[in-house]
Length: 534
Image 1 (tube, rainbow, N blue to C red):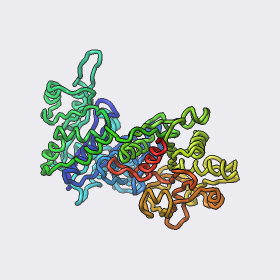
Image 2: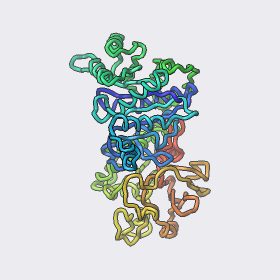
Image 3: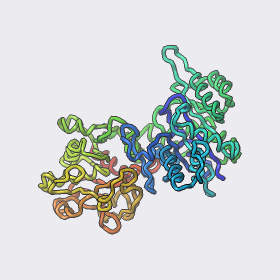
């Protein structure tokens, strides 16, 4: 079977378990092992697809159409693993499966209980990633030790260790060692108590990773080792990094975390090569080409995680162009009430991301018009593309009431309309056009120049689409359809012929960008912004 690593968190949430797990996976892959990754979330929603971005952040979409936790984005960006629907299970999904089986008579009249039925289903979800070609599976347990919601998952991994042995599975606990400013010292007691909670249910961490603002002393490590029953060399410091989250794997490798993990799992160390990763970090720290200002005009700006992959992809594009990308976050609702120059004057590029509903749409349209009329490089994504079509139809083609039927069903010019396949759909969760679909790009377009390929695959998450009935009228004024589905029925990309760089896409390119390989559209968007700034 595959070896398993379970990563839990303690003391407080938002410690960065996802980044830590992704960093561990990267190091293990660089030592020659095949790795799969998974997040188990304790909330009752079946998936995050129907959750507000303000509560959950972005919904990360996998190739096979899974709507998943944003931590899967870290897994793919750092480690280059390919995630799928089996990479994210929630309490809601686990319970739904068990209840459906009970309704079908699957338990032969037995009383269905948390133990063993729910915990068995959780273990089955963990084993779903076991594969002859997978050496190691990393499973991150969402939530914090002590949360009532997480107890079934913690019990399941305790049972897993008992059933498959300590040579086949290890526990890593990520905890906080806070610095008390008034006292001028760091405190280990919260971490001791967090490990104590795990011990009460039968889990003793093999490795303790300590998030901290300041360096830990040997005394701190000795105390944690003594009271948490973890060897001192397995108490790992994870201090806040100065420049980029991509420094985390290097810092963990410096403390031999990956060697310790392989030792516990009885696996050969192999050689570690991080030279390209370290060169990438050097580009982040000292870019050669200055700074570009990119405005992101969105609906959910108040929560940074709502556009997590967008911001990361812009950073990757900065690395590819050896330039620092300064992101100017612009709330679309505020823009619609103010003069455009107040928010967008001096920017080198404007990006309008996805979203749902009519809130903030006038602000997005103002930003797009500003980019179009001032020849500012523009990238529109999903709703951003739809808004670009609406703006062009209204202000260039004279269709003053042009709109999406999502916002106005009575419009005489529905340039954006509900997809035909969506018109009979009533349920909300998991029913959009989801996952990877092929796209054919037209020769001689900016899109073709970016990709260097006329056949691509990108991930989607939408219900509405470009209404091809208006394609000819828009084309006559200079809006070019540069990418379509293979049968030509669905418009995937548009661009403006008379603009230096104005490209928009119905899909979400940000999900396929990595720090070592920026997505072509983001790379060329930032390159155009750099040229515009000069």
